[in-house]
Length: 176
Image 1: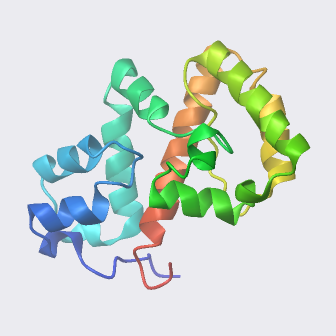
Image 2 (image 1 turned 135 degrees about the vertical axis):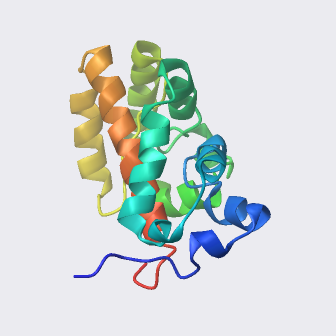
């Protein structure tokens, strides 16, 4: 199967168009797209796997403080922002797709308790690429990961952020 390619080649966009298209791929972190643009965008970047790897490399090289800020830019799952309709369009669609907007009172209470425990332990929200998962699978992962050590969970959360970014990039293709 051929690599997924963007509907609009990234190297054909001016700065404003590039930032409009890719500035929100990493939640509330346009600095990732800005750094990629500063490095230069070429024809190879029209393929999603290549583009996604470049963005991930920028995040991976950013250092702990910037990575932590990126993790903290994500909303809680079924959290206060979701209830108040304060999510980005991307996060809102992702959470709704997993049914998180339809939690029972018991599920919502469990998410709230886990969000509180997780945030207190790790200093950032629980992050998981929810596309393709249901509430039960998400809660099961949450229950497991809240028991991780901080280093393991930091790495796991960053890996999930990269998955979310890749899925968002795939939406910008004809196959998305």
